[in-house]
Image (cartoon, rainbow, N blue to C red; front, side):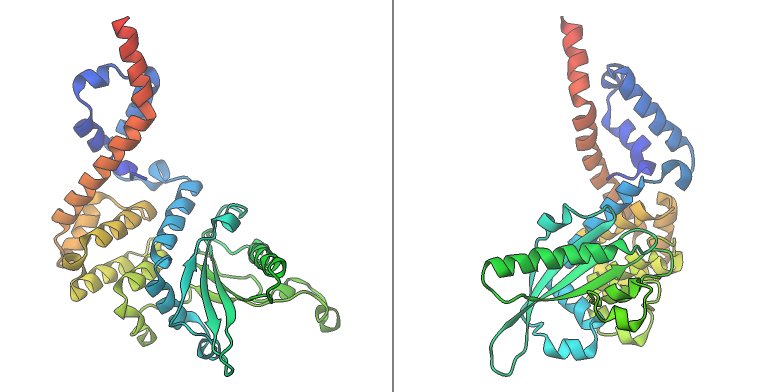
Length: 333
């Protein structure tokens, strides 16, 4: 997805004059709309992405980071309860594609599954699924219980069909919305009944990682900071719904201290694109923030603009290319 703040400049660079003149009416309307955005300073109300776009941005970002076993392992080391971690063999994990389950999900949820096992004295493996579900909306929803339950039933049904014992499934909820998390920590907690009734109800608990209450400046994150890309991702997701510029500044300084920009410019550009898509910011302001953090903002923003320009070319020609061909064909007839 290309930030609209760059559209006007990209159009000028991409379209030669003869091509602009052949644009159909619909194409010109789109370009005029883009040009109107260009004339204004970045305004979130006029230029913000739709909710669906934001969910897609966060979903893509979440999978980009957590589909890497090293990142998933380091995250679990940070968030899982100590007693639970001691019983899990996190030295051997696999990330499983969950699209077959995710396709049934409500919008605003994403998920991944980490396959591992319990440490047992007899040496017999007990399979464990650490089921991560991320809530992308700005407030928590009780529907998350149903999404987790769907996964449990889906997997247990496969186990029974294969004459296998049901696997152990541990849900982990990742929440980075703006509002306070108010959902009960157990399935049975949704029901307003006394304990005599509640003990007969279906129940399970989940581990919650809530970025609202996570203090990334705390000393307890010392080990986590060794994984620069995971730590950066968590802070950026924490800041995403709050326009927390202080956190962004600290991340830029963190990059400078760790030499990240020189080490891996590709991932830095990916992070910069995420910041662009989730915050109210102009290109000039972003460059200034980088410069103040002793990072060459001009070089990064130039590379970012060029990258987006290439993506925009593809999107533009995919959308308007067929119409332009039709117009050209009519002219030759």
